[in-house]
Length: 215
Length: 215
Image (cartoon, rainbow over all chains, first blue to last red; front, side, top):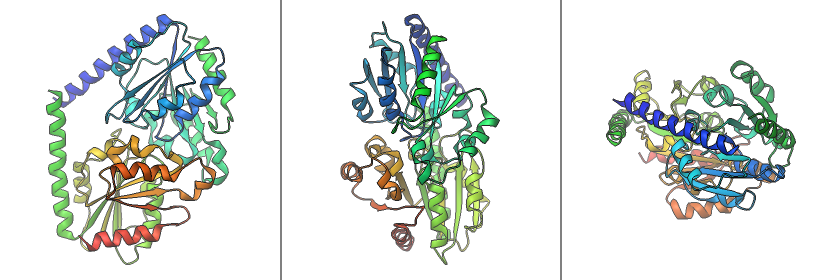
C-alpha cells in the first residue's frame, strides 16, 4: 500500500514536470534547478548571477519552508520572483512549480531559476521540469559530502564548488571532492566559485549561456 | 488514503520511539539526538565531546545516506559506534535506532549520542526515543536560518551555534539568530561553540552532565 502511494506521488510529479518542461520549451526559457544544503549560498549565487546575465531576462522561483527572506533579497534583480512556501515540505514539487508558472508571463524570458529548499536529500528525487540541474557544495560543508550525497551529485549537469574564498581558513581538501566525483559523475562540469567575491562567476555565466544556446 | 499512510508511518515510529526510551531509561542512559545541516559539524562536535566527558561512557549511532566516514572518525573515541546507512532516506527513524540498540550492550553506558542525517527538515518530524534534542546551526550557514527552519529550532532542548571561530571572516550577525529565537524558543539554552578550537565546549559538557544527572 505504502509503495503504491509513493509511486502515485512520483507519477503525479513526473506528469506535472513534463507539462512544465513543455510550457518552458514553447516559451524558449531554460529552467535551472539549483539544489544544495541550507546556507550553501543559493540566494547569494543568484544575487551575483542575475545582474551578470546582462540583457538576458530571468525569473526566479524560490522554495522555502517558511519566510520570504530569499525572495526579498532577489526582488529587484529579476523580472519576477515567486516565493513558494512548502509549509514544512522538504523539497519543491513539479505541481508547486506549475502553480508558480501559471502566475508568470514567460514571454521574453531567457532563464527560469528555481532555488530549491535547502536540503541535500529530498529535492534530488523530484523532477520539476527543469532543463539543467545544478548541485552546489560549499567548502564550509566539508570535503566528504560528494560520496555521502551521491543522489544529489550523480545526476547533476553542473557542479558548483562555492565559498572558495574561505579555503585558507578551513580544513578542506578539494582533491577529495574531485576524487569522489571521478567515481560518480565525470559528465558534469565542475566550477569553483565564490558568490561572495565573484571568483569563477564568469565561467558559470558562460556555462549558463552555452546551455541556453544549446537548448 | 495518503494521509492514513503517513499517519501509520508516524504511529509505528512513535511506538518504536517509546520502546527505545524505555530501554534506555532502564539502563540509565541519556539519549541525545543531534540534528543539523550537512557539514554543520556534528561529527567534529562528537570528536570533541567524547573525550571531554572523561569517565562517563558513551556510544554513538551515526546516520548517513551512504558511506561510513563519520563512524570511522569516531571509532576510537566511544565505547561503540554503530553506522546506520539510510540508503537515500533523509532522516533516522525510531525503528532503525531500535535495530541499532539491539546490537549494543547498554550496561555501564552514560550517553547514547545519535548523529542524525545531515538535514534541517526531515529529522525534526521523527522522535527516535531520545531524552534531549540538540539543534546545531553553524555561522557558515547564515544568520537567517532559525525562522526558516522553525520545526528544527522550536522543539530543541539546547541550541549550539557552531563555527564561532569563523565569525570574523563571515557576514554573520549573531543578534539576528537570538532575535529569531526570542520568538520561537526561549526555553532552550543557547551555547556558542567552535568544535574546531574548543571554544564553548566546556559549557556544552556541563549542560550534558546536568541533563544526565536530572534524568
